[in-house]
Length: 310
Image (tube, rainbow, N blue to C red; front, side, top):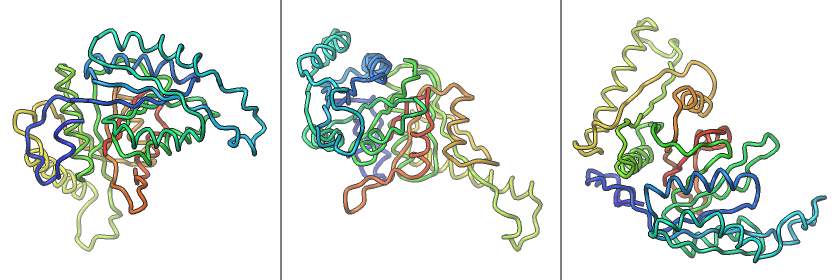
């Protein structure tokens, strides 16, 4: 997406340029998630002005219904109807005169066909909607984001087209550094004055594990001092001096619940408009190990779009 996340982390002192996107791949489900997702995408693209945008809808093949009770006729089977619907939705995106829109309708296994399109197009960004219906498991969304080799933007059906507050969960890993640099690149494109919050969450260890005689408060102060020093070191090492003023660091103790739940609660309380999270690297079989925290955030988010940076 930029010249920042594609370089080795040891060379990431390079200047961070405004976010540039050549190709976006958009998964269209022809369901209730499309409306909000496309409105948000139109808003988002108004800032980044992607060169190309490919909308893909996959009509599930009949073989997918062999072990189901639902009829295949539930899904639109007329390619012309689908193209007409997407054409109407994408007109506003094309009005900026900078983004070329392509519509592709396929039949088969949705995950396999979307993966094939991603391998063919090599998109800078994959966009997919997420249903917040309690009966929806979001299996396609999570599997696609997990497997695809590229940054992904997941837009829940209750999201709103606003981009003032960006939150980056930060664990001092190379993946978190990539996410923070992408957040800064997007911030430059938005031209907003709001800061980016880099959030580090820590848990207090059990005092019994320590042979040194320290009170709980002394140990907490020690951990906080260590985290603050680590934050300053990482920011100074991997973020150019001219960009550091837009990053606000926040260190907070997690006293209950899982980390994914804690991040979402923090995001909701502070009216976060976009979560940007780093993902782990690929395994030998090509599956992306997003990590349990990212997986949990994707499962829980209802109002906040999440960008997974790889």
